[in-house]
Image 1 (cartoon, helix red, strand yellow):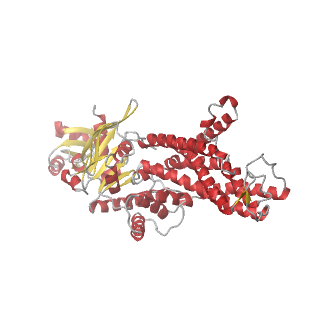
Image 2: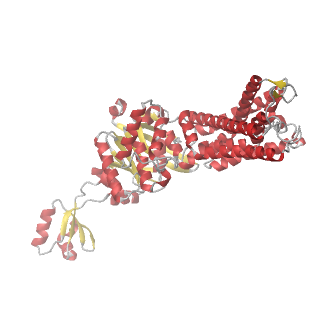
Image 3: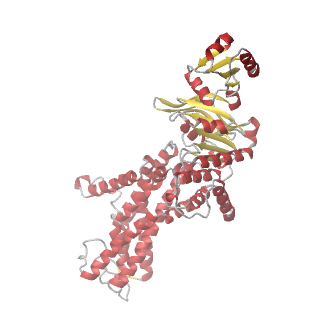
Length: 270
Length: 307
């Protein structure tokens, strides 16, 4: 079932359109930086962006920092929102269920497909932006990459930290996917489910800017998204990463269970 | 066909099957009985509860109360073992519009639990497409299909795994007369090979031409369930058309049940004898024969009866 869902995702033109859009933004940023030579001052703007003019190999990380706050979650909300509602809209849901495909099985396959999409998207973004970084931006110093704390990271160390960061981003997006999947089981409208999810994320971002909501901050889904930056400090600053993981796993569990409870006994009458 | 289904002879059996939506009883205490080998015609107006019943049989909608057995096993509990042997078309066909017909079937085929080899699957898909008159080599996306072709694709999906039971909701929707004829012939052929067919429709003519047994649903209640032959058996009446209805009525007296225009319905055992009598009395007869009700008349009659 998971394989079938993956094939469906890969063969869908929309998937590649979204990935194209995810790649387009960092590309634009790379071109603008290369042409103007105006990097944000250190400590401002998206993470790593200030460093890429001198070290182009950092650009994949900067690109992730660019797409993560907005574009990637929207893509995940669209895909997750489409998961059940989209099948319901086209009428294919009932034919899947009478095949039969177990309802729980279908939910898990859809969730796994969103993870696969995030992985695919992140890999494409990272690969393309690496090439862009090498071609358009500063050459890497031969000594190795400089961490955010100023010390030098070896190529090997940079590799596993990047892998960790990717894993962290995927788990963050899994939380979003679970919320979208839950909304997707509530409605027949894929757009409605996607918008609902985006609404939650926007609300979370608004509350993060509000000091009066301080007590809620540690529980908001978007609170620790950019904590993957801490993985490139020396030594690694684990605190926010770990909290981020806890929060995302919480959202993942709660909303996956809610989706399962709702979808498991739902009458399919469209 | 399972031994269980054979042992009691029922492929579908429901007891007091009920689905309530709030105060509305969409399906109300329905006792369906579909036997192995039947072509069962499930009739009812739009909104009479046909589709909800079909969805309950397939485990898509959960009944409020009552039981349903399909292929001798309880639904929806046994859906894992029942559904692989049931082919279905529910309301309208559905497909991923950016993929070709055969790609759609391949995806659907791959979702099941059976682990057939690639070649077996490919043959199975090609056969199903050919059966319904679609070209397996057609690579155009379903988006470009006509409604009739979509309907055929939906049927192919239902036939693909050679099910023991076909549950088809309005299978001739969107087909032209030629297509309807082809599909009817295909279904009868499959039935002759042992497939039980449960056909839901609001087209009386379609049911009358194909089915061996009918069930009629009205307002969620099953108001008639009978062999088609029994429903349409001779009524003991003879229909007479004559240019002289008044005279005939005088001659036949109380045997005349009704006179409508130039047509009389007469209670009589023997149409030939009646003909001879009338002609002997100098009444010319344009047409005479045993009177059979059409399915439509039967249904109108049952519906008119107080529930």
